[in-house]
Length: 184
Image (cartoon, rainbow, N blue to C red; front, side):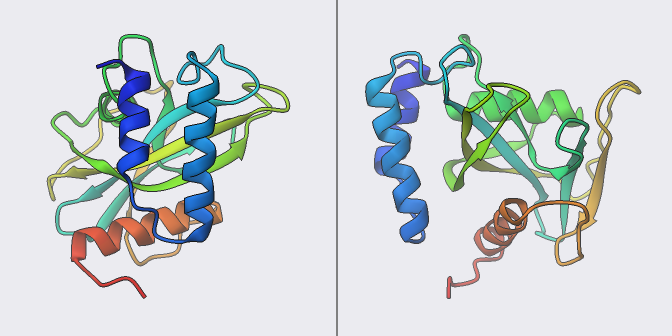
C-alpha cells in the first residue's frame, strides 16, 4: 500500500469527533482524490502532513517542541517523505527526529485534523495535518542536538505558553483517549 492509499484509507475509516473535524476529513479526502502527489511537500498550494503528540503512558505529561519558525510550543511533526509507508511511519519518524525517543507507540487512529496556513513553506498554502498520538514510557527523556528546536515535558493539565488552540485541543483529545474519559 502506498502512503497516499494509506492516508486515504485512514481518513475514510476515521470517525470525526465533531462537525468541524468532519468537514476537514471530507476536505482532506477531496484533496487526496484530486492530487496523486497530495501527500508530498511539492504539492501546491496544500499538502498532507503527519504529526504526533507525544504523551506518557500514564497520561500525565506531554512532550512539546518549541518550533523556531512558529515561535510556540507544538507537537512533533512535519512533511511526509516518499519513503514513508504510512501516516504512522511519517509521524513516528518525525517524533523520533525531534525528540530522540526511540520506540514510541503511535496509535494509527487520528486524534484530530488541523488545516493551518504555512507561509514559510507554501505561501498561500496549508498543511493538512493528520494528528496522531505517540505514547512514551513514563520515564522517557528526550535527546536532541544543540542546534535542534528545544523540547520540554509539560504536565498534561498545566498551561502551555505560547501555543495555539489546535495544540490545546490536541492535548485534550489525547488525554481523553489515554484516560478513557468519555467525550462530552
